[in-house]
Image 1: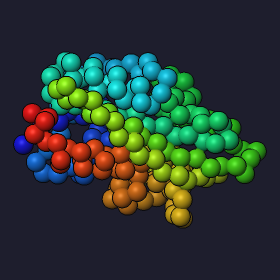
Image 2: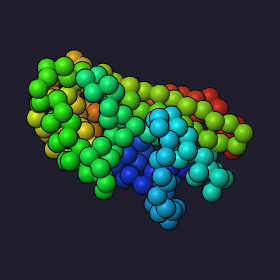
Image 3: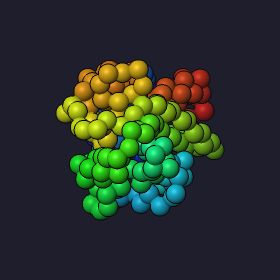
Image 4: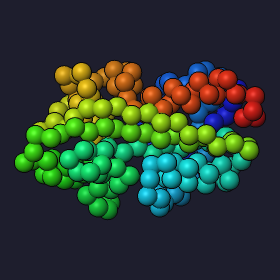
Length: 197
């Protein structure tokens, strides 16, 4: 059994990821480790923040660890909110305020193409590996659905007729950006488990 720390306090994400991992990988969240310090996301890219979080937790616990950073990138807004997605409307972070700001900024345009992008960084002894997943879609003109979190109520993936927030957890997991990045990491883990010990 491999113990793998997920460098996040987000229980939504933890549950999402735990459901996807093979049985021989035990996922441990920061909350379960009683680690409640906030890791400041001080980098200017998803890649940078993901690496910063994973390295911080690996150095503290000396166990294989991964972190993710995700962002919504909207073409009309030149890639914003991007790395600032969680706090786009300012502090403290608030999903509803973030959604309201995005809808306000797009209210006069039909250009609504966007993508969700996730970068996962896995840090273990003597190795660092990054995995990326992205999904294309568009921003709806109003919120739809009550499931999910973050920008899920206004993001409609390509070739779908509903938003992430209108899908069941398993429907969303089947196509989400985080799933795509996670699948790459799981494939890597399956092939390289021995090197993580």
